[in-house]
Length: 317
Image (cartoon, rainbow, N blue to C red; front, side, top):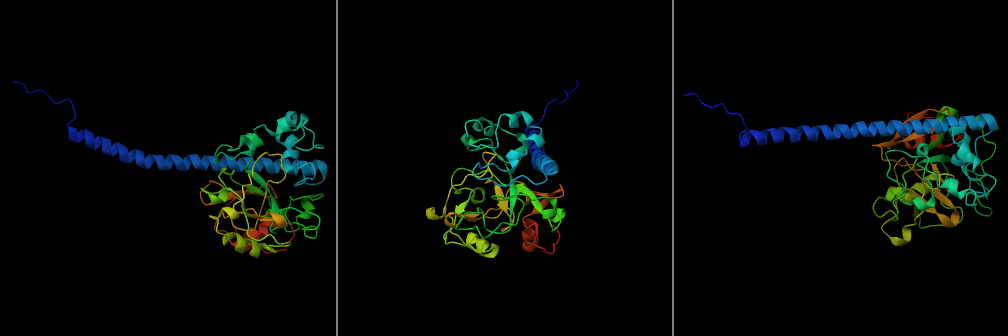
């Protein structure tokens, strides 16, 4: 009598197969996530590179870089370079001589521009404020965020884009275009005043005396020493929308992905770039190159990247 051949799995064999599949999936998912993030980071770098080309072309056509924060219209560099990122049709619907909040301009500021968004970041949590951007221009390495008569009128930021910046061009970067930052990244705020993720929001500092904080060191000391759990220390400024607004700038005071702080009474701040990329942020340099700068960068080197004319000796980055 011929015995029947076994055609199925035993329970133990099935469990072994399932365990092997689970192990393989566990090994595969992190690899897939790494590949996905690498692709997102490359896409983000390309966005910044395109923004750099637009700024260069603007300078070639106008003889100067676009203003960082124009008063009283509130236009910023990202809004003024629209014709140089192939957004002529959108630019034609808007009038840069009028405020970005003028009825003619508001519909345009609501438009979502993929070039201005990093694919690693989340969706815009406050879409009613307008189309968002993750890319902010470099204000410099001084804590002065807004120049205002009677407060900071005697101090001028040393970056390439700031309140009232005019007639800055390639010749203004005496430190060298390859040593001077033009733009970097910043996460969109999470809308909860930083209670979940502090690096996504701006916190109001404890001291707003005129002229304080006086320098980058003082700003960093105050900011990193703050008790951000205190409601009085929290200030919900949503940075990132609309993309046309000139307030979207950052500073080379605290290393990438560190805490950001603002001292509104003195119109001073330490706005730090941030991203969801592992270990650092992308930075657009004056020569058009985009470099990934790690959170552990030497602090003097990071601050030297922020100034256009500081005469610092640059380290590796």
